[in-house]
Length: 157
Picture 1 (cartoon, rainbow, N blue to C red):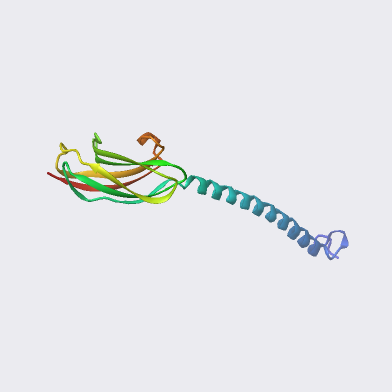
Picture 2 (picture 1 turned 90 degrees about the vertical axis):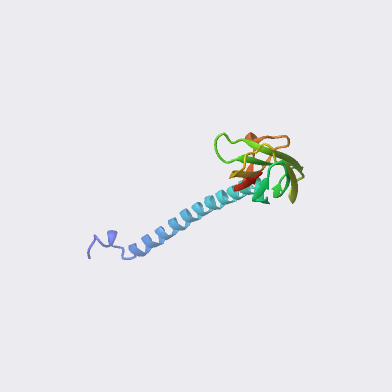
């Protein structure tokens, strides 16, 4: 008998070894899967709690005139009362604002209409953008939670 293949003369050693390895791997994988499951639940809870405040879409004109009032329709989701701010801005340095308007929205999902007056002194051109962002009540750009932007807005006199 070759003792290198069967230590102690036991011919069942490979079967026992395989069974032990299967048992160990089963418990190890079960342990890992439980940790992965708990991590997945924690990440989902974090995502749901932080994904509530969003600008889910908005509609704004692509061509505007100086001095006119434009209506911006903003779709949102908020987990509590928030402000939504719409602004018309030069899309390059010095990022000059040529119109800003704010609306307070309740918790939930909805659409709000924001009327923004375009500054009469805005120069004609096509390098402008309209942004809509959700922020804390009375918040500013610094406290923004989410933002959506439409570039290439054309301004005519």
